[in-house]
Amino acid sequence: MQIYADRFPRAARQLATDLIVVVWVYLWIRAASWLHDRVGELADAGRTLENAGTGLADNLADVGSRVGRVPLVGDELTGPFEQAAGAARSVAAAGQEQQDLVGELALVLAATMLLLPLGLVLFGWLPLRVRWIRRASAAARLRGVPAGSDLLALRALATRPLGTIAALGPDVAAGWRRGDPAVTDALAELELRALGLRGRR
Image (tube, rainbow, N blue to C red; front, side):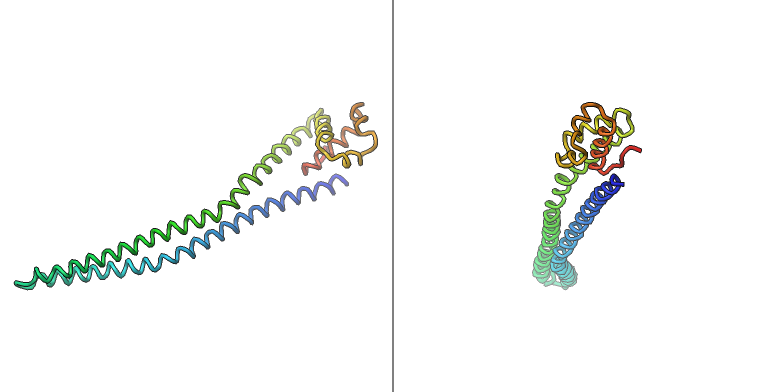
């Protein structure tokens, strides 16, 4: 009973940690997406400027083309309209450039916001999780092997806290050296519990 009482808190902690990491990453992604959208709204002014400049340029070009059909003075009157249309196209181009700049800024800010939290997950939590998975998988394989208890017991003697080992009895090390099956099994159970695994059935 003590084996399972010790096991569930460890398994629960592992599951809770995984869920916390997933939720934490999700919230940072949502926050970065929100920041991207908010900064992206600054592009509305550039979009308005582009549309106004394009519309004005088209209207001026249309008026210039109609004025150009006026006999005798048409060519002379077309020039100012063409120049004004060119200036309006420059305004439209400036609006487009502003939109591009805002889009790049929104992307850079969102990526920068995600850099630290994702870096902590990829280079901090994930390697630890992978290492635990490898250790737990190896221990699970040893659990079903006849000589696996010896290796698990040796691992427990080498890595578990002295106080935890001493709680198993006063002669744990001597019993393990003698090959006492009860001591070996107790140490193996201790290592399995530390990894959040069930003992041998």
